[in-house]
Length: 270
Image (tube, rainbow, N blue to C red; front, side):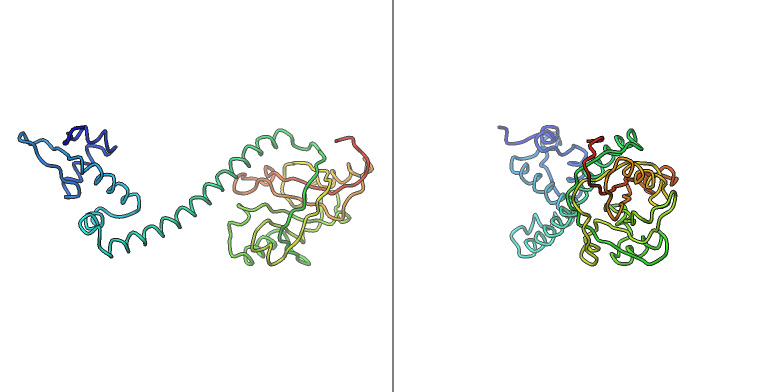
């Protein structure tokens, strides 16, 4: 292997562009020697030095800080700086991992939504495991009040965009296009601790439909179907938000999932 490299050779070895190498030379961060004809030449030792510079840049050090650290790499001050930036990187990695996971969840959700839109208003039976949520109740009010209450309790206005949530409605109180909006559940960690509630495991008659969570006529329709099919229905029906204001502009375009606990031997949909 050659002891010295031209700037183009050094670019291939280190992955640092010639433009950046010239800039490093200009600010005295990585200074090559000059050949007799004035061309830049880099030594074998500078390959490792270049790699250290790139590593420290990725560790969020400025070029000025790197220059000092290369001169004082054995000092306690350098070690202290490395520890500080390493801790900051750990925090950033944790945050990026959360973002990565959220993006994965969003991809899955959007792919599911594409399927949901093709299967609206089609009842189906499903077996569901118990779901632990937080539940907020009010004696009177509206859906905006419920959202506001949860905003206040969890201290995070983005909870409804990040966590599964919906209404719990007494089945017996569902009218054709009306039902009380007095309880909202959410799979939000803080709310789960403050107001724990479990949505029971078991068989559900479910259906995806368009429209908002409140005053949705498809809720009464699904309950009536369950009765016609001789199912015993549960005390509560759950109306879960599937898509809303962050994805749709009009409430008529919202998507919800209606979940009605059932029991009985009717197997028409199974």
